[in-house]
Amino acid sequence: MMPVMDGLTATKEIRRWEKEVGSGKTTIIALTASVLEEDIQHCFAAGMDAYLPKPYKSNQLFELFNELKLA
Image 1 (cartoon, rainbow, N blue to C red):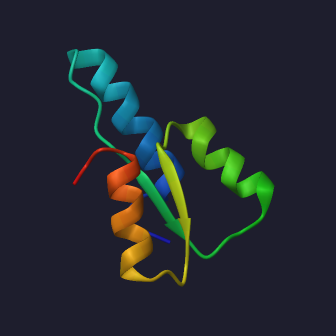
Image 2 (image 1 turned 90 degrees about the vertical axis):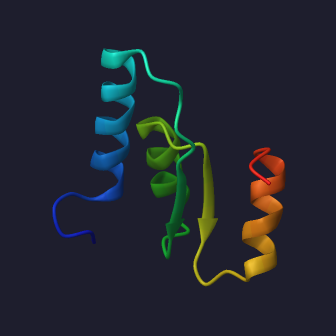
């Protein structure tokens, strides 16, 4: 868990701020040890763009970057 707020709350706040100021969308990727379908759905419902379970290999992350057009 992050010290000030968890990833779901942080994502919701970032998305709220983006709407408030008319900012472009920041890409947010969930990197989590949870593989429960309910938790994955919460990530997307909060506004995350992708999900990658831990542990992951660097090539999986780079493949995700390519899918999201970040590389």
